[in-house]
Structures are given as C-alpha cells and as structure tokens.
Image 1 (cartoon, helix red, strand yellow):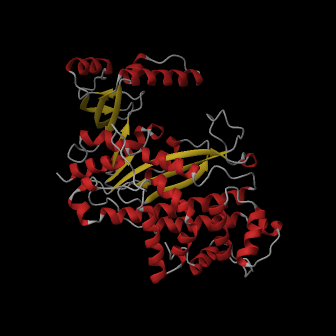
Image 2 (cartoon, rainbow, N blue to C red):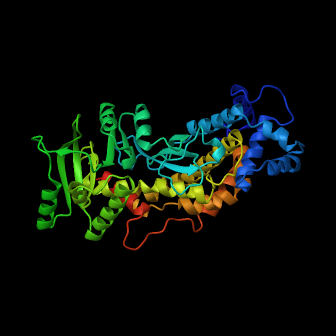
Image 3 (cartoon, one colour):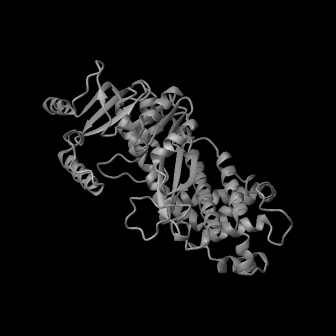
Length: 451
C-alpha cells in the first residue's frame, strides 16, 4: 500500500488518468495530500479550508475559484484510480487457513444508501422508499469483503435507485469457484443462485417468502404442516433436501429454525405495515406461517457447512452493517455539504480510501494475533479488535498513519509499533451476556472446521 501512495506512483496515476497534463505549483502529489488532510480533519471539505491548508502547510497560494477548477471529471478519475490500486494491493491473511477451509473465500456483501446534494438529482436519484428525505438525489455504495482474508472484493458507488437485486445480476461474473457468497434478501434471485452453482461456487441465503419450495417428488411443501410437526416433537431445527424456484428448480439444503412467538408476531406486524405501505393489501397465510421460521438455503454439503455453523455464520453478515455505521458516525461519508458533483465525488472517494487504509491497519494487527502460536493451538484464545473502537482511535492518529504510508525503515517500524500499542489497550470486542459475539462465533467455526 505504501508503494501505491508513494509520490512517484501518485504522479504516474495522475498522468495516466489525464489529471496531470502539465507541470503546476499544485502537483497531483500535493493535491492528493491536501485532500487526505481535508477528509481527516473536516466533515464538509470547503474550498476555504483547502485553500488555507495549501497556504499554511504547503506554501501554495490559490484562490478558491482556481482551486475549484481543479475538481473535474479527470480529478475524480485520478482519485478513483488510487482507490482501485489500493484495493488491488491488499494483503491476504486473517483466518484464511482455519475458518471453513472448504471455501477459498467467504464473501459478505451489502449496500448502504444516503442522500447527496439535490443538484445531482438528474444523475443520482434517491431510493424510492426514502420518503423522509428532503433530497431526491442519492447514492448507493455496494460493498463486499472476504471474511477469511479481510480483503475488500467490491466497492462501487451507484445511483441510489439501483436496487441490490440488480447488482446481484450484474456482478454475477465476479463469482469464482469455491467462493461462499453470503447476502441478505435484497439480493435474492434464483437465476443468480443458479449461476453461482454453475460457477462451482456456494451460497448461504435466507429464503424469500414468495419462493416456492418442493420435495423430492415435486410436491409443494406445506410450512404449516412442518410447523405443527416441529412443535409437537419439540424440535427447533430441521434440515431438508428440497427444490426451490418457479421456472427453474434448484436442488438445495433447506435449514429451518423455529423462532419464539413474540418474534413471529413482530415479523407479521412489520410485514403487514410494509405491505400496506406498498398498496398490496393483507399478508397471505403462507407468508404468516413462514414468519415462524428462520429459513436458510445453501448448496454446500453438510461436510462443508454443518447445521450448527449455518445460523451463527449468517449472523456474521451483521459485521458489514456495523462497518456502515462506522463509516457514517466516524468518517461522516453522508455529511458532505452542497457542492458541485466533481468535488463531492473526489471527497467521497478519498473518504472511502481513508476507511480502507484504516481497515487494513486493523486487519494487519488482527492477523498478528491470529498468527500467535498460542492462539493457533487453542482457538478459544482468539481475541478480536473492536472495529468501532479501532476506527475511532485511528481517526485521531492521522499524522501517524500518514507517516506510516510515507516513511520507511526504522521510522516506519516505530510508527507501526506506536499504533499497535494504542490499539492493543482497551480496544477488544467484549462478550455480551447471553449472546454469542464475533470472537465466540469464530471460535465455533474454527473448532468445528478442525474436527
């Protein structure tokens, strides 16, 4: 990563993107450093702040108008190219060998949406369901990472009205053999699941309530009968080999888990409210009866992914939601003020770049814990850094991080040691009484995989 953000390489990317066409007192390297400082210390990214920063820290005087002219399409291409290079140069590590070894990657994907200044409405429309927003302009950030290595496998900004199911269909070519794909219901599509099977990849997905399910004799399954049977026998989990879909039937393992009555009632209330809001009337009895279950489907064999692993593994998908909260609460990616499109997206890409760098630092420290011989011999000793605590602290260590990216040799080692010492003090994820937390789920997965 240090190589990507070196001054010579930044200049090279600026030239190749067309951002740097001739020599200037505001070189692409200084411009990049200025942007990096700006997103680290301010939420808004005003031209006044940047012009003042150039004068105080770099000895360059520029008017706000001259500086504003530097924000154009080629500028966005430049910072996007830097982000793509950083993503391409990520390390691999973390839990690669220990966590569910049957899968080369465990890819967790979700999106976060937020409004943008209304002057971008023509190109970036807000999600239709965002009725409380004053702005009709919005973006969606599609984000996917590999749980085993920590590597970000997808990071794209699209119009806010582009839904997740569309993304699932358009990104299907990115699936690779032995990948395990985990997404929420917004991405659910039987054609996509079929493509996943054809690529010899695997999926773990909740089942959409409108999807038909058939037994081996192609008879539609009655969830009402299953519910009665499980209640009568006292069984709370059940696995079945079934076929799902309409035109195309896919053979899958279906794993059912009964939920408490209060959870079922809450689901029915929420679905009823949503259905009325969309003008679809009352819920069907089939939809109501399915509210009694957590229903998952997978094409992985029992030897690859056991029933005991399915439910806690899917819970790890919530880690991506926690990351989105950090992005918004710590890095304020949704709080940029009204400005022209090119300056807005330059700042947004730089914010995402800063997030990725901080995540990589956190993952690097986490990897050093996992590689400890004592941990490898006893997975129950796994300690996990709290993403929220780590990112909050790293946000305050901008000068150290910037030095880490630009320094080398002994100086870089000293900075790295200082950052490690800071994060290894009171930055651990804590267990919650009565609940499996992230470290405990990892222990369960790793211990089960090693049997």
